[in-house]
Amino acid sequence: MTRGDRRDAFVDQAAGRLIRPYAVAGGRTAPGSDFHLVTHVVATGRPPDGLGPDHDDILTLCRRPISVAEVSALSGLPLAVTKILLSDLLGWRAIDTRAPVPVFDRARPSTDLLEKVLDALYKL
Amino acid sequence: MPSTNSDLPGGLKLLIAGGFGVGKTTLVATVSEIVPLTTEATITEASRGVDDVALTGGKTTTTVALDFGRISIAEEYVLFLFGMPGQERFWFMWDQLCIGALGVIVLVDTRRIEDSFDAVDYFERTGIPFLVAVNEFEGAPYAYTAAEVREALQLRDGVPVVMCDARSRSSAVNVLIALVRHLQTVDHHSPRPAVPAGAVPEGSLI
Ligand SMILES: Nc1nc2c(ncn2[C@@H]2O[C@H](COP(=O)(O)OP(=O)(O)OP(=O)(O)O)[C@@H](O)[C@H]2O)c(=O)[nH]1
Ligand SMILES: [Mg+2]
Image 1 (cartoon, rainbow over the protein chains, first blue to last red):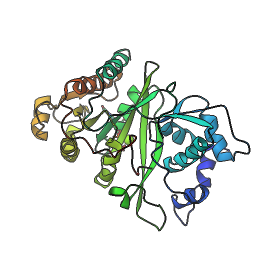
Image 2: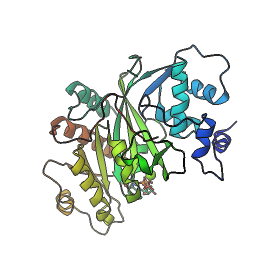
Image 3: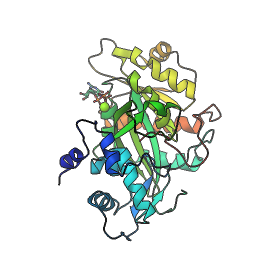
């Protein structure tokens, strides 16, 4: 199945392209705050039995460490649907996650972090 | 849910804001180590103030295509650059995107400098560190200087202005370097977008 086909599977012409994914995802709405655009995920190598095709596709993308944004882009699934499916996989312990580097209210990003970013940019 | 696997890279986020056709996607593509990707994010009208809004009941929703690229930072981190739509109807999602972002590049086209007034207002108000990058299109009738752009945008002292060509790798990388240098010196005690307790949230940006 190609990306284009996949995408179409989630488009409901009458309801618009949003409602349908939520129906597909079992009527659930936005998962909690476990997943952000730049949260990283990786498969644990313990896939649960009987995964459906959507979960399976996503888990395949997680064989190497990958961000939530990339899983969404490469699967062709909207971010919302991607987060729900990842949430399931996390619940089944089929993936590990790492939260984004926190850049909190009033917190200066660490000197060390900014130095590393600069070093990498100078090498580009 | 706490972060669990510290073998995974830590995600970092930079944003590129700017008006229609100003060169955001071009800039992302120029510096990214991958061909830029697109994720389709959705936000609901009601989510402006409320976090976990059910998407049922036909609430007004907006779907936004976010272009992004990535730069690996050693083995430890990955820096993601997201192009943010600059049109007025998308401003309500900036709050969501800005949370947890290191900083912002406001990309300006001097042929339509007024297109960036609102972005500058927005970022000055939220206190998120930003710089202004002037994408120099050769068709522009007049080559503005950085000082003239600063004047036109009424920028606060300390907000850097850099000239660039979004199509040139060295020039685009210089913009990123200027932003990170700015982050090293900027006063981080100005107000930032409020972050709810717990993990870094993107709230209802789904
Ligand atoms: N001459 C010149 N053209 C540029 C430059 N940067 C971008 N362009 C061109 O301007 C057009 C718009 O650039 P994009 O990168 O798509 O702009 P954008 O800000 O992502 O546009 P939207 O996402 O549609 O708002 C493209 O045709 C680019 O090739 C530049 O520095 N000089
Ligand atoms: Mg674009």
